Image 1 (cartoon, rainbow, N blue to C red):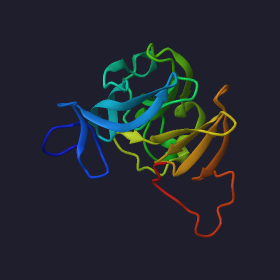
Image 2 (tube, helix red, strand yellow):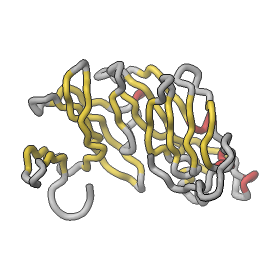
Image 3 (tube, one colour):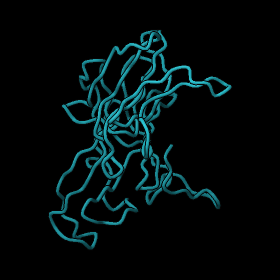
Length: 214
C-alpha cells in the first residue's frame, strides 16, 4: 500500500505465482477480499489516498471476469474511509467514513472550539450509495472515552472494522477508545461496550486490550 513500485491488488496461487494483478497507481488499494454479491463471487476493495491514517477514496467491486461492476463513495457524498468495506448477506455495503465537528474541549483540559474527527458508519445500497443506516460516533460516544492525545486533529474514536452480529446488529471496533461497540442496526443505540473506559463487562485479569483493529 506504500513505498516504491506499483500499487494495486493481486491474487497469488499456493505456489506464489501471480494469478491476477490490477494496478491502482497512483492510488492505494486496501481491504482487498473475496465476497458474494447477488449470489455471485466478486472481488471488493477500497481505492484512494491515505491522509494521516484516514482514507479519502471509493469502494470498488469487480465480477468473476475481473470487470468493474460498481464504484461508489460513502453516502451523502462523503469520501469512503480505508478501514472497512464489506458486503452484507442482503447485498448492501457496510463502510466507514469520517466527519469533523468543532467541540468545546475545556472539560478535557484543552481549549474551546477544537476540531474533532468522528467516525461515520454507514449501510449503503449498491451501487447507488443511498444511505440505509447512518451512525455517527460523535452522537453516541463521549469524547471523554478516548485514550487519544488531544492535538490539532483530535481523532478521538477511529473506527477500524464493522462486523455483523448473529442477531443482525453491528459490531464496531474503535482503536482510539480501546473498545468494541455493539450497535442497534435500527436505532443506532449502543447496546454494549466491551473494553475501554466504560465497559459493560467486567474485564478479568489479562483481558485488557488497546489499539485493537478487529
